[in-house]
Length: 187
Image (cartoon, rainbow, N blue to C red):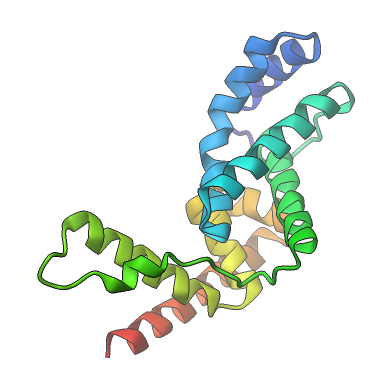
């Protein structure tokens, strides 16, 4: 499978290997948003997500000279593998479990009479994150990579070390499980 940005990525990588900081900046601009969303979906903490994002790109910059494109593995998959490893390291260092979520306590004190659209969005976000913590780890990971990270099924398969078919099945089951949790809460 040929990815649209592979050739452009490879050209930017080669320029960055030669010390072109602007080329690396373009790589950062291209992928930082998706990786940040992936971290934020997992951590619900902007500062931790930013710190891990910085770690991913610092690590990538430092090891870029040794990077060799692998056939069938786009650069974005390479970055998300680093991101996933950084997240695992973060949890190990912080002695967190994967399903720990920091919730803003004030969100539950919002009264119905004064609820704004922004407040409703915050409440919905917290409720969605609460439901995500109830999913199995692999279900949660596939949802985060596919929908927060914006990876294709093929890319998600490469990051998770599974076949594309297994990812499609896993995604279907994850969404079905999430829907069951959602319906249970709505009752």
